Amino acid sequence: MALAAGPETQKGRMVIRNIGLMLSGRLEDPILDADTVVAEGGRIVAVGREKDCDIGEVRVTIDAHGCALAPGLIDSHVHPVFGDWTPRQNQFGWIESTLHGGVTTMVSAGEVHLPGRPRDIVGLKALAITAQRTYDNFRPGGVKVLAGAPVIERGMVESDFAELAAAGVKLLGEVGLGSVKAGYEAREMVAWARKYGIQSTIHTGGPSVPGSGYIDAATVLEADADIIGHINGGHTALPLSQIRCLCEGCGRGIEIVHNGNELAGLSALRFARELGQLERVILGTDGPAGSGVQPLGILRMIAMLSSLGDTKAEVMFCCATGNTARMRDLDCGIVEIGRSADFVMMDRAQHSSGTDLLDSVEKGDLPGVGMVVIDGIVRCGRSRNTPPADRVPEILHG
Image 1 (cartoon, rainbow, N blue to C red):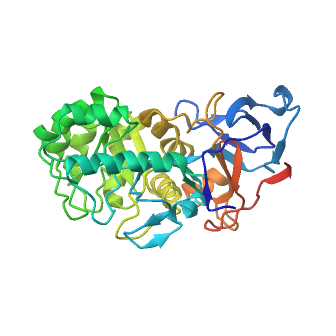
Image 2 (cartoon, rainbow, N blue to C red):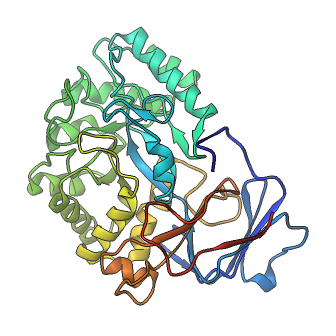
């Protein structure tokens, strides 16, 4: 597959048939009674049993051979820079490699690793607009990267947020990575951002990069950002008492990341479950970071939180797909008519002790990815990064 792609969509009709397990991405109905998906023009046009779907005039047919199909995974917390290169590790191809971990969409929490990142207001706005435009036009491996997330700095005024929104910026980088660290300062800017349709994420826990600081629960609650970014720390977590306070003290998104404290992540999941608010839980990697890049980071989070967090695997897949799509206002992440045709097809890894895909994940094993589809276009076949799957899909024609 090509390492780079533009914003292409499927031509003609695609049918995926013989699906053994269909995961919806929706917590209220995580497993669908369906074995076929039909997509046209990059959108889902039918979901159900093959006998009930219109599969005529098909350009591409994929036989899933009994594999599971889920919405493409969404990484809610990444730090891209330009193209498919990260200066943090001086590594090329990290986004395309993550495609092989089933991720079809990434959400930037700030382009903070750019050497010489501008911190003046004109420069930070220019960088955000450039990143937003660049990744709108360039998709490494086909992966959708929602970028252009400025790190707010002191001196910004309401008109700056209006200008960013008018230019197409829809995200703020992690609040607390710049000079704005006090809760009262952040709250005003977060409110301005929200007024103009820009979503905010706040850094939580100890410092991660030069210029960041310690952000405690009181600051997070006062700032009132839309997403509690890496509630389990990136890397250093808050005390569990403060994490519980955050889960109980607001209704904002609870983001658990790979590059954080695992005990804190498991605790946050438990607190959300006890509150009956699993719909608030979303997953990210917080990569690239000092620990490197994690092509299988989202799958590892699903397996870890399911196996050690006493949570059904199909529920954790919802946290990595539909929950994030709803919270981030994305048109992917759920298998339903009208949504983007973004899918990952998987099966139990060969020789797993689990009896099937879900059981193997609940036992802590990673699934084997057999195919990834973005906007109705097959972007990779058998993953080069996951363990080999028992079964893999097959393109019959197209």
